[in-house]
Image (cartoon, rainbow, N blue to C red; front, side, top):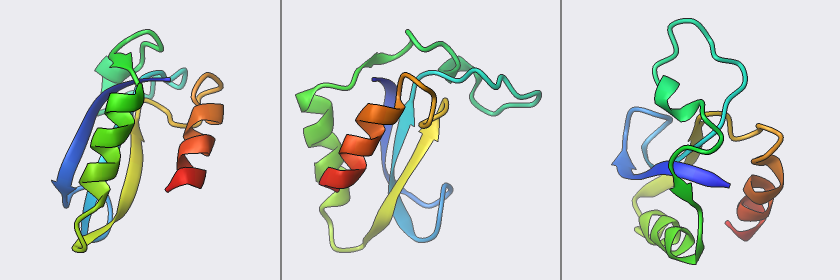
Amino acid sequence: MRFHDISRDNMLNGDGLRAVLWVAGCSHQCKDCHNPITWDINGGVPFDEAAEKELFEALSPSYISGITFSGGDPLHIKNRDEVGRLIEKI
């Protein structure tokens, strides 16, 4: 899986303050999409151990309500397995 960003303390993408993982890859290409830069499955950077550590650090404060998976399409065929494993870890 590749990703574009990990947002901390985000209050625009779900209830409360959240961490947001912006994954790469989307085949829907919706008209008026807010994030067309995330459509390319080869865009962004690899989601590696350092990125996972950064994400878990973003989730660690007690005031964080949860995580939002955005992008791109977290359920794109090339993202599903890794997103699923990540959800299990969380």
